[in-house]
Amino acid sequence: MNFLELFNKHGLIAAHRGARAICPENTMSALKSSIGHCDFIEIDVQLSRDGVAIIMHDETLERTTNVAKIDAYKNRIPYRVCDFTFKELSSLDYGSWFYKDDGYTHSEPLLSLHDALHFIKKHQLFLNIEIKDMHKYFDDEYVVSTILKEIDDLQIQNLILLSSFRHEYLSLCKKKMLNIPTAVLVKNRHPSSLIEYLNTLQADAYHLNDELVDKATVAKLQEAGFFVNVYTVNDLIRREQLFNMGVNGVFSDFLE
Image (tube, rainbow, N blue to C red; front, top):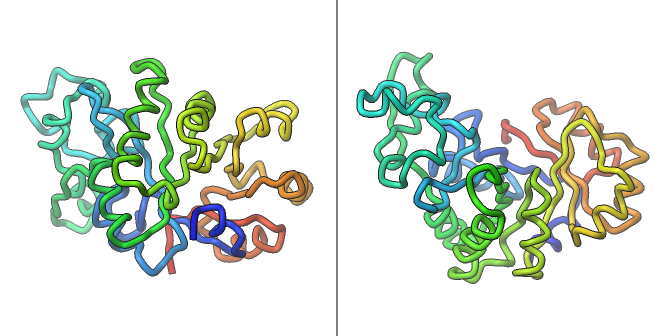
């Protein structure tokens, strides 16, 4: 089965940044804890200063690492991911922030895209990779080529869906690797001439926030051949409403 065949199923659940309700987001622990509790996993990718693809949601490190506590990095504010080398990023703790309210620490290592892809290949899991917008720091071609090479090296195109709020990345992905499906990410407003716009991008899916979705738009998109997935949906009643509306899947922090 490939990703587009998976989307033909009804009521899909995507693990948003892994099982982030019970594990630190975007870590190997979050991926492992997602197995058996979702239909596919969503993670975020961006590049280190030296061009290594790593799994991290925020543009900066302070929320989900211990970077602010390390004396050697005190002068590195605002702690942008792109200002740190892969070696420096690998020295940080990506887990203890999550457990601090419970009164104890539990260190988690950096998750690289390389390791995440090897994991999903081993377990044959479907993975939605959101490419974070890095156009201020890296050339679009460089970003896309770096990520696609990792996927191509493992020959797991059938397990991958690429999404981004920077739609230029998606166009490049299709030019370079047509067989990997792409999803256009939006928040709070639709692009003008939506269907025409998605066709121009050669997109396969449309990912929108819950506040933006409505039944008419879902029907219009699906009639035009696009899969529709909604983020971030943590309420079970709302989840069922969306499925009854016809959406293909929802991204959730809480997995059953």
